[in-house]
Image (cartoon, rainbow, N blue to C red; front, side, top):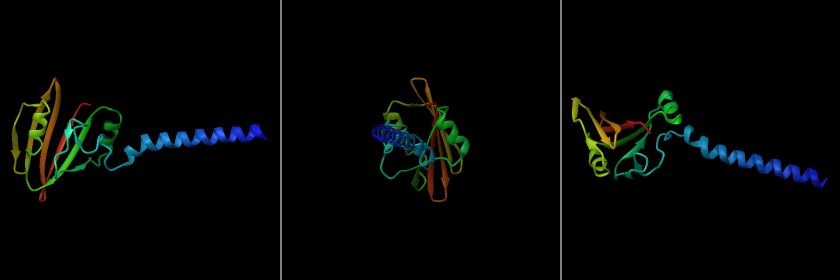
Length: 139
């Protein structure tokens, strides 16, 4: 009888540990903010997130899968008004060098930045009365 209770306790403990591991790892990929690895920071902990920006992630399944598999990194931030260059200053202060400066049409702005050979694509899009800034690159 005592052996059966010990075995049951071991099985329950193992199931609880497995559940905790799954919760810790899988919860992120089910979240709408799956792409934000370090909340409150810009580009995965590079610098603190400036005030007034709301993090978002692309809803696309393919983006979610690429981020999950470590093939790419993407982060999105929304702010009121049209401020296409809002995150360029913090990125430059963190060591990124801006390579391009492309106002590609009304309500669209793009730039490429480099930091020690690591390319970062910066895209700002006017959506209604807000700016959506998407940062993407290799992890």
